[in-house]
Amino acid sequence: MSADLRVRPVGDVTTEPLFDIVVDLTPRLNVGPGPLGQRVLFGAAGGFFEGPALHGDVLASGGDWALFRPDGTMSLDVRLTLRTHDDALIQMTYGGRWVTPPDLRADMTNPATRHIVDPGRYYFRTNPLFETGAKAYAWLNDIVCVGVGYLVEGGVAYKVSRVL
Image 1 (tube, one colour):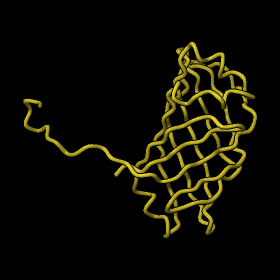
Image 2 (cartoon, helix red, strand yellow):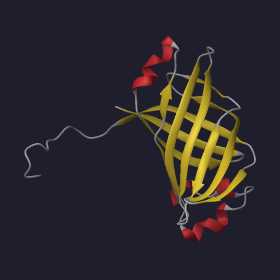
Image 3 (cartoon, helix red, strand yellow):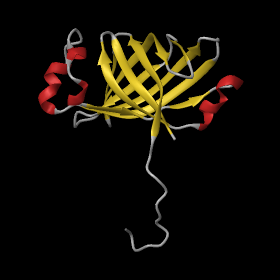
């Protein structure tokens, strides 16, 4: 316990499932090396999301303007557009980190087999936020989420949870 009386218990961070999402990706575009690392665009080619309170499709727009840092960590900068089953549009943005241990990097370079690598062997976390004008989904404008990512054939997937 801290000696500073301003520090007090506020409860543990808890979450509840929001949805699972699969994002199909277009072939990567190498923007090139810059002052912060190698910039790569992974374009969104579509996909879907499904959860207890909402479901629908990932539109073929947006993507991840990823930065591969010199230490091998990928820094995510993602913008996606989701269309719900009842035709509402939702903007989803997130940053995050994908840390692949050096001994695993060779296994991750082959797009035909990298989705087979156990996701427990790498760290892939995101912090999704949402924006929408749809009244039925306005509650999304005021929540913070966390996501656990993993590779799938042809793209990436995440288990997204709402922080309570």
